[in-house]
Length: 179
Image (cartoon, rainbow, N blue to C red; front, top):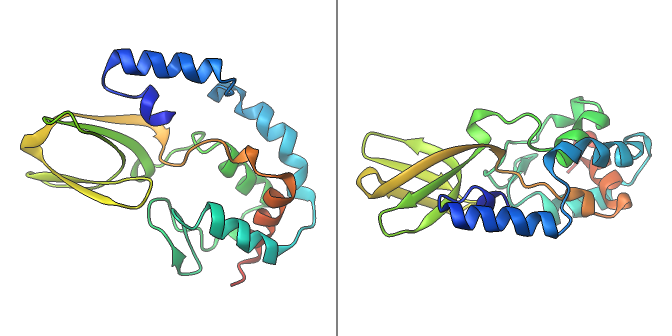
């Protein structure tokens, strides 16, 4: 949704926004309601071993934790020093606080290719975009038609769709810092 709603073609962006609205997806302003409905999970004792499986299935592609995982998002090693409540807010509302290095960027090339992801390298002659799958795309500056930053994170919304037990277990695992 983030990529389509931020598409450089206004017709595509408008259509994507309308489809998102009709799909019943909560707009960003309603993230607090999602958080409030699940905040009780931060107080719940859970199973760190089961949380490791949730992490591996849902987070490891993008995040490194204890030396393993992807590099699209920030390294989560040490996040367990934070309260579970704070960790849960970051999971459920990834756009609340977006560090510049993890901001979503969209680039349109002169071949009409549209890529989005994290801007990892920027030189006088080229840029590098790291997409959500962790694939690196190097684009020559003379091939760039448009390069636009977003206010959104590269981390998508929607993790509230995980089962409550899975979210609680994930919080336990992240806070435990165990392999």
